[in-house]
Length: 376
Length: 237
Image 1 (cartoon, rainbow over the protein chains, first blue to last red):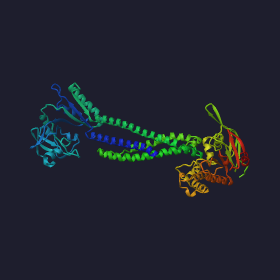
Image 2 (image 1 turned 90 degrees about the vertical axis):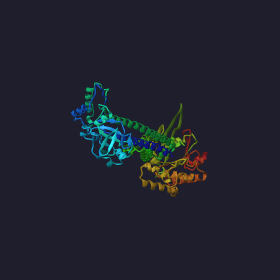
Image 3 (image 1 turned 120 degrees about the vertical axis):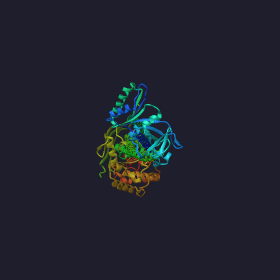
Image 4 (image 1 turned 180 degrees about the vertical axis):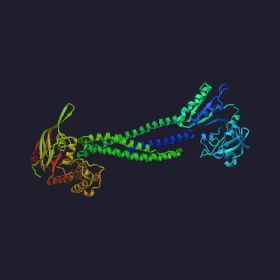
């Protein structure tokens, strides 16, 4: 019973460490993954165009062409808020973006069918568009049925030249990642009735050149606007960096919590061992009278502590692994116990068992056999 | 074995405790020689210093001053580990409360001194079993101590004392917890062991038990005030 209570401390300590670390790891890798899939090599530029100071698309392209060593793709972003219609059926949550011919590669998307917007479409302001998988099914009942059909965007009729491949494998829903229409930015600008475009996305050739690329854009825009409040430059990789440092901090925090819980377990082991020594003073006296040396007594108690805490550690690992899997699947996380967490928590629990078992053991070993024999 | 060869030689043994400001002389200049094969009773009232004497003879304690030779070896100035070795090799203890370990079975209890002597597993089992046979409890070797009567438990503790083949059997009030009939059995067994050549010392407060021995040493206030043949002792009672 007593050693079971000791074990319980270790079991809870080890299991909670494994559960905590594994779940948070799962959550973090999920976050990092979804963040990376958004494109870490992208730099988003937003400008506020004034009548006196502004950047035109042509200027932006000129800058882009001058810095092909830094950038591999660039696209203007024109958001249009309007509804799309096929006959009487309309959709209101659909994302409508005016983009360049490089947008598909930049976003790392592929086409299910048809072709993407071409440079000539942009120059000649062809009323063509590429629609998302959800839109194709929702308005036309299939990918092939949508190709070459017409769609009404804000009162203008566009021809569908392509359908993008499905993005979200799990669900298709209104406002989801497959609910969009891409059209040439030159057409989109007309729909918004703005002369200039205020948002651009660049893709850098190399992640290590992110800050260099940012500086280049900054230098260019500063020259035009003379005021850094009029534009913002956001690099995805910098956001990732801050996410990573946040993750590192959380890991440290977790380590602290885990350490405390294992320490508490260790104190429990020591407590029980001290009680055990007191209760077994007579036994120690008998053993000493029969010729046990200090080292024999020491060995006995240290081994006892080590065995108790190792058994507790093993049970803790089993409980922790099972609980991690159960809780992980309940939370919809892909959480599996990390070998590091298992190894560290186990070795720490055994180490603590030994450490905290050592003190009572040395107390037991030092007992005078006469006093020990006399105790009841 | 020569009867006159000294096994225990105590020379001018003092054991002094400090109790606050007071000095308690538990052994106050004891000189005593016990030869191999003797059966000696150390008798004395509670507080007379007989337990202190037993602790020193049993190598459980060391004297404050004086010389103690056990089998020719100076024990009085040994370290804890050396004392443990002496207890293991030379002395078999029999206690009033049997002092068996409750969680170990009889065989494991009897094996203990052999375990600390460093004997191998099969040797331990063999010797422990032999020892249990001598006290007539070999068939119960699997039992736990509390499944036995008091007399049987004391026989197990005798078996344990014998297992390591000690030079001296030191029995502290061996019949103190037993009724008169089982006491008789234990005393007869000790007598038998003595006849087989074992050196035996009984520590007791009971004069009638002391008369079972061949020689009686009476301790009062840390001093020996009688040392002689059992018949002489009976005469002065």
